[in-house]
Image (cartoon, rainbow, N blue to C red; front, top):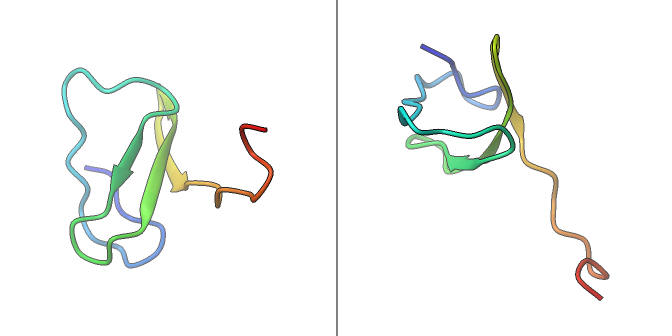
Length: 54
């Protein structure tokens, strides 16, 4: 089971998870991104920048 890179809590990945999907850590609330499904890799999601979507 993957762990949160921030606090080390176990993260449950849904069976239908997709690459680049965002998941919150159930313990610390950090927003995590699925970087890769094989092998399963999690990292902190990038912070939303002020000019994104413009």
